[in-house]
Length: 332
Ligand SMILES: Cc1cc2nc3c(=O)[nH]c(=O)nc-3n(C[C@H](O)[C@H](O)[C@H](O)COP(=O)(O)OP(=O)(O)OC[C@H]3O[C@@H](n4cnc5c(N)ncnc54)[C@H](O)[C@@H]3O)c2cc1C
Image (cartoon, rainbow, N blue to C red):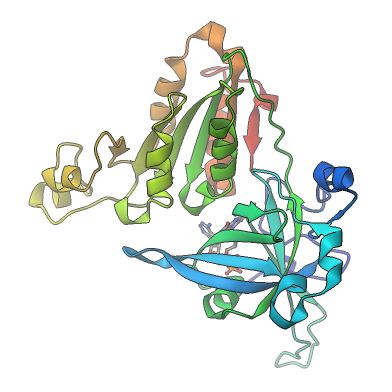
């Protein structure tokens, strides 16, 4: 654990190397709040209580959906000031979760002066009037915030602030725009509201090409939602599984299921486009080059995942092989 992981009041950075670091980007002002003559409840760190905590799917024990509601509307806390607030989160933006750290001394008597533990989380759903939001959390890591969220109980409180990000999106009524979305694991959460916004709008004819990367079939987060999005003419999704492996001898020898593996195929839904291998830069380049040169100027890309994942694909897309302009690649 490095020193940058805990911060004081003036240092809001979590040390995670976020593409959109809170040190450079202030939480976005809410136009909706200004219009309504209200305040976005997330502008300052404020308490939310946990309303619900459910497993994301029966197949996976580490992914949980956590549903928070502003403490000013929770149970006994209910006050009339709630009507002064809305909760506004932009699609693709994240919130900072803050935990006060106890003032402890280590074995040589040096006091821990770092007051807060901070980590970003990306809401995939929110209700502006009810001051509620949901996040999808992966408990696989044994880090300090994971341990807090693993043990948090319904009714417990946690402090959040935001929304933080830079993604700006313009609807396209002409149908020229293509939005490539590349996601890694749980980082599919911030793109879900981006996709929903586009598909819900009859005036937006943007075509979405979603390349979703996961560990294996059990870790396809929002599998149902991605499948349902496919009913829209302007959403296409390819899912890539880096570590899909059944117990067949050929697949074990291949260190992964093959696309022809019957055990793998049996697990797929009708017309679900799932590949039992990792999305490589070669694969992405091939997909991208199908677009044709005159289309490139209408292409934007959103990449959500770890810094390494984001930079690998950004470097390829902005290289001469793909020729995309830097400003059209958005890292969440
Ligand atoms: C912009 C942004 C949005 C995020 N949104 C979410 C979200 O919605 N849901 C969620 O569960 N997490 C999200 N994360 C990750 C989250 O902020 C924490 O890093 C994570 O919960 C682990 O925190 P920790 O304190 O338990 O462990 P840490 O001390 O941060 O990490 C423990 C170990 O696990 C590794 N690790 C942590 N997270 C990941 C990861 N996602 N992939 C690979 N290795 C990892 C770290 O490198 C470290 O080695 C987001 C991260 C960023 C940068």
